[in-house]
Length: 113
Image (tube, rainbow, N blue to C red):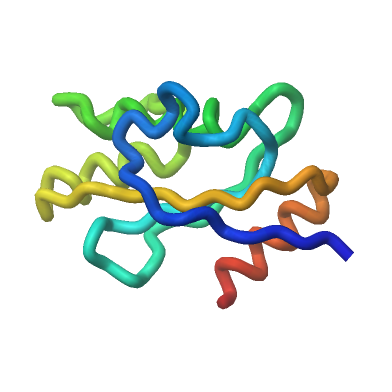
């Protein structure tokens, strides 16, 4: 059986810099700071994509213009939340060396919970 645990919540802004996030595959969850509900759950690890790289794909969320062509699908929605609600985000990750189908199953489970 595959086991993993979620990291502590940390600010998403610039979490991709330095050693704040692991350069490994796994799952991630994003929420607005001050909220207990989740805004997004995802998984990554196919090829050379790591949690650190995946979160770096969200840097456009802090730009002046909506990242319509942001490399991450949730980028435009997060940008809109930031501007509409003056929101900021935090992230928690779970490292997983499981194969993609298993990570996707864990992602679906996290969403359902």
